[in-house]
Length: 360
Figure (cartoon, one colour):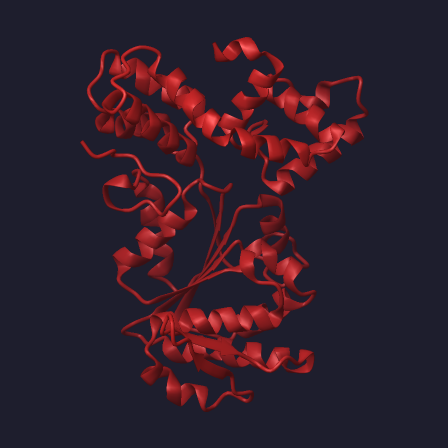
Protein backbone atom coordinates (compact mmCIF):
# COMPACT_ATOMS: atom_id res chain seq x y z
CA UNK A 1 0.00 0.00 0.00
CA UNK A 2 1.33 3.44 -0.91
CA UNK A 3 2.42 5.62 2.00
CA UNK A 4 -0.33 8.15 2.74
CA UNK A 5 1.86 10.81 4.37
CA UNK A 6 3.90 13.52 2.68
CA UNK A 7 6.45 16.08 3.89
CA UNK A 8 9.14 18.27 2.36
CA UNK A 9 6.95 19.33 -0.57
CA UNK A 10 3.72 21.28 -0.92
CA UNK A 11 0.87 19.17 0.43
CA UNK A 12 -1.78 18.49 -2.20
CA UNK A 13 -4.94 16.41 -2.51
CA UNK A 14 -5.22 13.69 0.13
CA UNK A 15 -1.90 14.76 1.67
CA UNK A 16 -3.35 18.16 2.61
CA UNK A 17 -4.34 18.29 6.27
CA UNK A 18 -7.72 19.86 6.95
CA UNK A 19 -7.62 23.65 7.49
CA UNK A 20 -11.18 24.54 6.52
CA UNK A 21 -11.57 27.67 8.64
CA UNK A 22 -8.25 29.16 7.53
CA UNK A 23 -9.01 28.37 3.90
CA UNK A 24 -12.41 30.06 4.16
CA UNK A 25 -10.96 33.19 5.74
CA UNK A 26 -8.31 33.48 3.05
CA UNK A 27 -10.94 33.21 0.32
CA UNK A 28 -12.93 35.98 2.00
CA UNK A 29 -9.90 38.27 1.76
CA UNK A 30 -9.37 37.38 -1.88
CA UNK A 31 -13.02 38.15 -2.64
CA UNK A 32 -12.40 41.73 -1.50
CA UNK A 33 -9.99 44.53 -2.42
CA UNK A 34 -7.97 43.84 0.72
CA UNK A 35 -4.54 42.32 1.16
CA UNK A 36 -3.52 39.52 3.53
CA UNK A 37 -0.59 39.21 5.94
CA UNK A 38 0.01 35.55 6.84
CA UNK A 39 2.41 34.74 9.69
CA UNK A 40 3.53 31.40 11.07
CA UNK A 41 6.77 29.56 11.87
CA UNK A 42 8.46 27.68 9.05
CA UNK A 43 7.03 24.31 8.06
CA UNK A 44 3.57 25.04 9.45
CA UNK A 45 2.04 24.69 5.99
CA UNK A 46 1.70 28.34 4.87
CA UNK A 47 2.78 27.63 1.32
CA UNK A 48 0.54 24.57 0.97
CA UNK A 49 -2.44 26.49 2.31
CA UNK A 50 -1.91 29.51 0.05
CA UNK A 51 -1.31 27.30 -3.01
CA UNK A 52 -4.51 25.35 -2.33
CA UNK A 53 -6.46 28.57 -1.82
CA UNK A 54 -5.36 30.34 -5.02
CA UNK A 55 -5.88 27.18 -7.06
CA UNK A 56 -9.40 26.72 -5.68
CA UNK A 57 -10.40 30.32 -6.46
CA UNK A 58 -9.10 29.74 -10.00
CA UNK A 59 -7.28 33.03 -10.46
CA UNK A 60 -3.83 33.74 -11.92
CA UNK A 61 -1.10 34.25 -9.33
CA UNK A 62 2.52 35.40 -9.18
CA UNK A 63 4.74 33.88 -6.49
CA UNK A 64 8.05 35.42 -5.41
CA UNK A 65 10.16 34.05 -2.54
CA UNK A 66 12.18 36.95 -1.09
CA UNK A 67 14.50 34.52 0.66
CA UNK A 68 16.44 34.27 -2.60
CA UNK A 69 16.41 37.98 -3.43
CA UNK A 70 19.64 39.88 -2.72
CA UNK A 71 19.07 43.33 -4.23
CA UNK A 72 16.45 45.57 -5.83
CA UNK A 73 17.68 44.47 -9.27
CA UNK A 74 17.39 40.83 -8.18
CA UNK A 75 13.86 41.48 -6.90
CA UNK A 76 12.87 43.04 -10.23
CA UNK A 77 14.44 40.32 -12.36
CA UNK A 78 12.97 37.44 -10.37
CA UNK A 79 9.54 39.06 -10.30
CA UNK A 80 9.63 39.50 -14.07
CA UNK A 81 10.63 35.84 -14.45
CA UNK A 82 7.71 34.80 -12.24
CA UNK A 83 5.37 36.88 -14.42
CA UNK A 84 6.63 35.12 -17.56
CA UNK A 85 5.96 31.75 -15.91
CA UNK A 86 2.29 32.77 -15.61
CA UNK A 87 1.75 34.72 -18.84
CA UNK A 88 2.90 33.88 -22.39
CA UNK A 89 5.46 36.11 -24.09
CA UNK A 90 2.88 37.06 -26.71
CA UNK A 91 0.84 38.71 -23.95
CA UNK A 92 3.88 40.48 -22.46
CA UNK A 93 5.65 41.66 -25.61
CA UNK A 94 3.53 44.81 -26.04
CA UNK A 95 3.81 45.77 -22.36
CA UNK A 96 7.57 45.25 -22.29
CA UNK A 97 7.98 47.78 -25.10
CA UNK A 98 6.78 50.48 -22.72
CA UNK A 99 9.48 49.79 -20.14
CA UNK A 100 11.75 52.79 -19.69
CA UNK A 101 14.71 50.42 -19.36
CA UNK A 102 14.41 47.42 -21.64
CA UNK A 103 15.34 44.08 -20.09
CA UNK A 104 17.65 41.74 -21.96
CA UNK A 105 15.90 38.52 -22.85
CA UNK A 106 17.83 35.39 -23.83
CA UNK A 107 16.67 31.88 -24.59
CA UNK A 108 18.53 29.03 -22.92
CA UNK A 109 18.99 26.46 -25.71
CA UNK A 110 19.27 23.58 -23.23
CA UNK A 111 16.26 24.27 -21.00
CA UNK A 112 14.32 26.33 -23.57
CA UNK A 113 13.65 28.88 -20.81
CA UNK A 114 13.68 32.63 -21.19
CA UNK A 115 16.16 34.43 -18.96
CA UNK A 116 15.82 38.09 -17.99
CA UNK A 117 18.33 40.68 -16.96
CA UNK A 118 18.83 44.41 -16.66
CA UNK A 119 21.99 46.36 -17.23
CA UNK A 120 23.54 46.89 -13.75
CA UNK A 121 22.86 50.43 -12.60
CA UNK A 122 21.93 51.52 -9.10
CA UNK A 123 20.38 54.72 -10.42
CA UNK A 124 18.06 52.66 -12.63
CA UNK A 125 16.89 50.26 -9.89
CA UNK A 126 13.87 52.38 -8.96
CA UNK A 127 12.80 52.75 -12.58
CA UNK A 128 13.03 49.00 -13.21
CA UNK A 129 11.08 48.27 -10.01
CA UNK A 130 8.32 50.74 -10.90
CA UNK A 131 7.96 49.35 -14.43
CA UNK A 132 7.74 45.69 -13.34
CA UNK A 133 5.32 46.46 -10.50
CA UNK A 134 3.19 48.52 -12.92
CA UNK A 135 3.08 45.47 -15.18
CA UNK A 136 1.26 43.55 -12.44
CA UNK A 137 -1.51 46.14 -12.48
CA UNK A 138 -1.81 45.98 -16.27
CA UNK A 139 -2.05 42.19 -16.30
CA UNK A 140 -4.84 42.08 -13.73
CA UNK A 141 -8.36 42.22 -15.20
CA UNK A 142 -11.82 42.10 -13.60
CA UNK A 143 -12.34 38.66 -15.18
CA UNK A 144 -8.93 37.35 -14.10
CA UNK A 145 -7.98 39.31 -11.03
CA UNK A 146 -4.31 38.76 -10.23
CA UNK A 147 -2.98 37.54 -6.87
CA UNK A 148 0.61 38.48 -5.99
CA UNK A 149 2.29 36.38 -3.29
CA UNK A 150 5.45 37.58 -1.56
CA UNK A 151 6.89 34.70 0.47
CA UNK A 152 9.25 35.34 3.44
CA UNK A 153 8.38 39.02 3.13
CA UNK A 154 10.35 39.96 6.26
CA UNK A 155 13.45 39.72 4.06
CA UNK A 156 12.42 43.02 2.46
CA UNK A 157 14.12 44.75 5.39
CA UNK A 158 17.46 43.13 4.50
CA UNK A 159 17.43 43.53 0.71
CA UNK A 160 17.61 47.32 0.52
CA UNK A 161 17.19 50.15 3.00
CA UNK A 162 14.15 51.74 1.34
CA UNK A 163 12.64 48.84 -0.60
CA UNK A 164 9.66 48.63 1.77
CA UNK A 165 8.93 52.34 1.20
CA UNK A 166 9.25 51.95 -2.56
CA UNK A 167 6.91 48.96 -2.68
CA UNK A 168 4.35 50.63 -0.43
CA UNK A 169 4.29 53.80 -2.57
CA UNK A 170 3.61 51.68 -5.68
CA UNK A 171 1.13 49.16 -4.26
CA UNK A 172 -1.04 51.77 -2.53
CA UNK A 173 -1.93 53.24 -5.93
CA UNK A 174 -2.90 49.89 -7.45
CA UNK A 175 -6.39 48.41 -7.55
CA UNK A 176 -8.05 45.27 -8.81
CA UNK A 177 -5.50 42.80 -7.45
CA UNK A 178 -4.67 41.17 -4.12
CA UNK A 179 -1.33 40.84 -2.36
CA UNK A 180 -0.50 38.09 0.12
CA UNK A 181 2.50 38.83 2.35
CA UNK A 182 3.80 35.64 3.98
CA UNK A 183 6.45 35.50 6.68
CA UNK A 184 7.95 33.06 9.19
CA UNK A 185 9.72 35.50 11.50
CA UNK A 186 6.92 36.97 13.57
CA UNK A 187 8.96 39.76 15.17
CA UNK A 188 10.11 41.17 11.85
CA UNK A 189 6.68 40.76 10.23
CA UNK A 190 5.03 42.66 13.09
CA UNK A 191 7.72 45.32 12.75
CA UNK A 192 6.65 45.76 9.12
CA UNK A 193 2.87 45.61 9.51
CA UNK A 194 2.12 46.66 13.10
CA UNK A 195 4.64 49.41 13.87
CA UNK A 196 3.01 52.80 13.31
CA UNK A 197 6.03 54.35 11.62
CA UNK A 198 6.40 51.48 9.16
CA UNK A 199 5.38 52.14 5.51
CA UNK A 200 3.27 48.95 5.57
CA UNK A 201 1.51 49.75 8.86
CA UNK A 202 -1.90 47.98 8.85
CA UNK A 203 -1.61 47.45 5.10
CA UNK A 204 -3.40 44.09 5.18
CA UNK A 205 -5.50 41.86 7.36
CA UNK A 206 -3.35 39.94 9.82
CA UNK A 207 -3.76 36.17 9.98
CA UNK A 208 -1.69 33.80 12.11
CA UNK A 209 -1.43 30.16 11.13
CA UNK A 210 -1.16 27.98 14.20
CA UNK A 211 -0.79 24.26 14.70
CA UNK A 212 -3.56 22.00 13.45
CA UNK A 213 -6.00 21.19 16.31
CA UNK A 214 -5.23 17.90 18.04
CA UNK A 215 -8.61 16.30 17.26
CA UNK A 216 -8.34 17.12 13.55
CA UNK A 217 -4.77 15.86 13.29
CA UNK A 218 -5.59 12.72 15.30
CA UNK A 219 -8.30 11.76 12.83
CA UNK A 220 -6.07 12.60 9.85
CA UNK A 221 -3.19 10.43 11.10
CA UNK A 222 -5.33 7.58 12.42
CA UNK A 223 -7.26 7.16 9.17
CA UNK A 224 -4.07 7.02 7.08
CA UNK A 225 -1.92 4.72 9.20
CA UNK A 226 -1.78 1.05 8.17
CA UNK A 227 -3.67 -1.38 10.37
CA UNK A 228 -1.66 -2.32 13.44
CA UNK A 229 -2.20 -3.40 17.05
CA UNK A 230 -2.80 -0.43 19.35
CA UNK A 231 -3.26 1.92 16.38
CA UNK A 232 -4.89 4.49 18.67
CA UNK A 233 -1.86 4.49 20.98
CA UNK A 234 0.50 4.82 18.02
CA UNK A 235 -1.41 7.85 16.77
CA UNK A 236 -1.28 9.48 20.20
CA UNK A 237 2.47 8.79 20.49
CA UNK A 238 3.11 10.43 17.12
CA UNK A 239 1.21 13.59 18.09
CA UNK A 240 2.77 13.70 21.56
CA UNK A 241 6.26 13.63 20.07
CA UNK A 242 5.58 16.15 17.28
CA UNK A 243 3.34 18.44 19.39
CA UNK A 244 1.06 18.60 16.33
CA UNK A 245 3.70 20.41 14.27
CA UNK A 246 2.40 19.89 10.68
CA UNK A 247 5.73 19.03 9.03
CA UNK A 248 7.19 16.80 11.74
CA UNK A 249 3.89 15.00 12.31
CA UNK A 250 3.78 14.01 8.65
CA UNK A 251 7.48 13.07 8.70
CA UNK A 252 7.12 10.80 11.73
CA UNK A 253 3.83 9.30 10.52
CA UNK A 254 5.49 8.54 7.17
CA UNK A 255 8.30 6.62 8.87
CA UNK A 256 5.91 4.85 11.25
CA UNK A 257 3.92 3.67 8.22
CA UNK A 258 7.12 2.33 6.68
CA UNK A 259 8.01 0.49 9.87
CA UNK A 260 4.60 -1.20 9.93
CA UNK A 261 4.20 -1.91 6.20
CA UNK A 262 7.75 -2.54 5.01
CA UNK A 263 9.59 -3.74 8.11
CA UNK A 264 6.60 -5.48 9.72
CA UNK A 265 7.39 -3.89 13.10
CA UNK A 266 4.71 -4.55 15.72
CA UNK A 267 6.24 -3.22 18.96
CA UNK A 268 7.76 0.15 19.84
CA UNK A 269 6.89 1.35 16.34
CA UNK A 270 7.10 5.07 17.07
CA UNK A 271 10.38 4.74 19.00
CA UNK A 272 11.94 2.77 16.15
CA UNK A 273 10.71 5.34 13.61
CA UNK A 274 12.19 8.20 15.64
CA UNK A 275 15.58 6.47 15.88
CA UNK A 276 15.55 5.73 12.13
CA UNK A 277 15.02 9.44 11.39
CA UNK A 278 17.69 10.45 13.92
CA UNK A 279 20.23 8.13 12.32
CA UNK A 280 19.51 9.63 8.91
CA UNK A 281 19.99 13.19 10.20
CA UNK A 282 22.79 12.61 12.71
CA UNK A 283 25.51 14.26 10.61
CA UNK A 284 23.29 17.26 9.82
CA UNK A 285 22.57 17.77 13.51
CA UNK A 286 26.29 17.47 14.33
CA UNK A 287 27.10 20.22 11.83
CA UNK A 288 24.26 22.38 13.12
CA UNK A 289 25.44 21.95 16.72
CA UNK A 290 29.02 22.91 15.88
CA UNK A 291 27.89 26.31 14.60
CA UNK A 292 26.41 27.47 17.91
CA UNK A 293 28.39 29.42 20.48
CA UNK A 294 28.57 28.06 24.03
CA UNK A 295 25.82 30.34 25.35
CA UNK A 296 23.40 29.20 22.67
CA UNK A 297 24.39 25.56 23.23
CA UNK A 298 23.54 25.93 26.90
CA UNK A 299 20.19 27.51 26.01
CA UNK A 300 19.33 24.65 23.64
CA UNK A 301 20.28 21.98 26.16
CA UNK A 302 18.08 23.59 28.79
CA UNK A 303 15.14 23.82 26.40
CA UNK A 304 15.58 20.19 25.33
CA UNK A 305 15.21 19.19 28.99
CA UNK A 306 12.07 21.28 29.43
CA UNK A 307 13.78 24.04 31.41
CA UNK A 308 13.33 27.78 30.90
CA UNK A 309 16.74 29.48 30.38
CA UNK A 310 15.31 32.71 31.80
CA UNK A 311 14.98 30.95 35.15
CA UNK A 312 18.63 29.91 35.21
CA UNK A 313 20.20 32.03 37.96
CA UNK A 314 23.75 31.08 36.95
CA UNK A 315 23.38 33.17 33.76
CA UNK A 316 22.50 36.85 33.55
CA UNK A 317 18.90 37.26 32.39
CA UNK A 318 20.05 39.68 29.66
CA UNK A 319 22.46 37.02 28.34
CA UNK A 320 19.74 34.33 28.34
CA UNK A 321 17.27 36.66 26.64
CA UNK A 322 19.80 37.64 23.95
CA UNK A 323 20.47 33.96 23.28
CA UNK A 324 16.76 33.18 22.97
CA UNK A 325 16.23 36.15 20.67
CA UNK A 326 19.14 35.06 18.49
CA UNK A 327 17.88 31.47 18.24
CA UNK A 328 14.33 32.59 17.46
CA UNK A 329 15.63 34.82 14.67
CA UNK A 330 17.59 31.91 13.21
CA UNK A 331 14.48 29.69 13.34
CA UNK A 332 16.05 27.04 15.59
CA UNK A 333 13.55 27.75 18.36
CA UNK A 334 10.03 29.14 18.21
CA UNK A 335 7.91 30.93 20.74
CA UNK A 336 4.22 30.18 21.07
CA UNK A 337 3.09 30.04 24.68
CA UNK A 338 6.67 29.26 25.62
CA UNK A 339 10.07 28.83 24.00
CA UNK A 340 10.71 25.44 22.41
CA UNK A 341 12.95 23.86 19.78
CA UNK A 342 11.37 24.05 16.34
CA UNK A 343 12.52 20.55 15.39
CA UNK A 344 11.43 17.81 17.86
CA UNK A 345 13.95 15.39 16.31
CA UNK A 346 16.81 17.79 17.01
CA UNK A 347 15.41 18.15 20.53
CA UNK A 348 15.46 14.36 20.97
CA UNK A 349 18.96 14.22 19.47
CA UNK A 350 20.16 16.65 22.16
CA UNK A 351 18.51 14.56 24.90
CA UNK A 352 20.24 11.42 23.64
CA UNK A 353 23.62 13.17 23.54
CA UNK A 354 23.15 14.07 27.20
CA UNK A 355 21.80 10.63 28.10
CA UNK A 356 22.84 7.95 25.56
CA UNK A 357 20.82 5.30 27.38
CA UNK A 358 17.66 6.85 25.86
CA UNK A 359 18.51 5.23 22.52
CA UNK A 360 18.43 1.67 23.83
